[in-house]
Structures are given as C-alpha cells and as structure tokens.
Image (cartoon, rainbow, N blue to C red; front, side, top):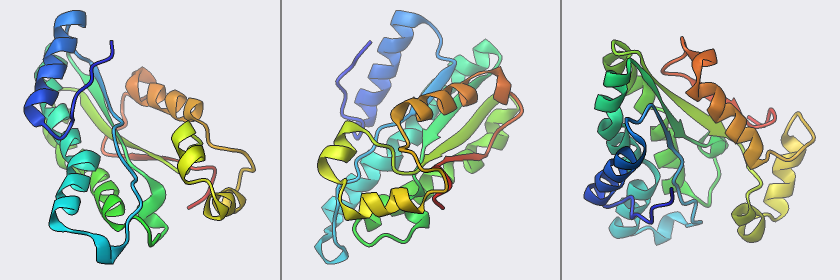
Length: 190
C-alpha cells in the first residue's frame, strides 16, 4: 500500500497510519525510513531550512512510533526501527543539519525503550553507511563516495537489500531481546 504523505505534517502522518491500520489491522512493526540528505553549507542554513530538515529527518519518527504504540500493546509487543546514518560519526562538512538530525535519531530508542519495553515493544536504530540507492548514485556518488567505499573493511557496495535484511532481523523474533540499540551496517567504515 503506497500513500503519498507529507511526513512533516503530523496530522497527515497520523491519518496515513490510520489508513494502513484500517487496511491491514493492528501495526506490529514500524520502519521509520524517510529522510532527505540534501547537501548544505553552514553559512547557507536559515531557520526555515533548519526546521524543515529536522522535520524531514527526525520529527516524524517520534510521532509515528507514538501513533502505533497502542496497536503494539494490543498485539503483545512490536518493533520500531528507526533509520539513522553513520554520517554524523564521520564529521562531514556538507550536511551539518542532516547530521544533527541523524545523531538525534539514535537517541529516540533510548528515550522510548524503557517506557515501551514493559509492553514488549522494542525500539532500535538501523544505522547504515553509504547505501548505493539510485538517488545516491545519481546525485552524490563522486570522489567522496568512492573514497568511502575504499575506507570500508569489506570491499563491496552496501546495497538496499542489505538494509532490508537487517530490518527484517530487527522486526522479528530473532532480535526479541534487543532494544535501545544501534545496528551499524556499513561494511566496517566507521
């Protein structure tokens, strides 16, 4: 089911979650994967750009988790998986507000895990390195991207399928005692 929703509009986000619930029943797994890594320089950041970047990259993750909590309680548990990024660990200079948001994403599980753990709801962060999505290859794969691959311990591209398999691990019972954790999937880059 595909829904075209502006995730910065929390009422629209909640309505979309309700539409999914109506179509499929209670939600037991939430993967918060929406983000935008638009390149920017420190001097060019306006308050409006800052607020929009934070809204696109972190704000919705909290409110989506909040919106599915009652479903997961009724189901006897569930899994919330937030997508972070290793970018903030690398001290890049061309995406400072994105990096700020992604560092914050890793705080969400720590803020929610104890309160939701009593209901057997797990909250974790999947932290990818440079995943070779079509967007990344089209917009950003330059000498920096090539250097990133060279700095990985595993000499292979991180592909979306690698992330999907890691998300499935976090979604299902194999990770039943894992919460408030970061699963870094970057080929040994950081």
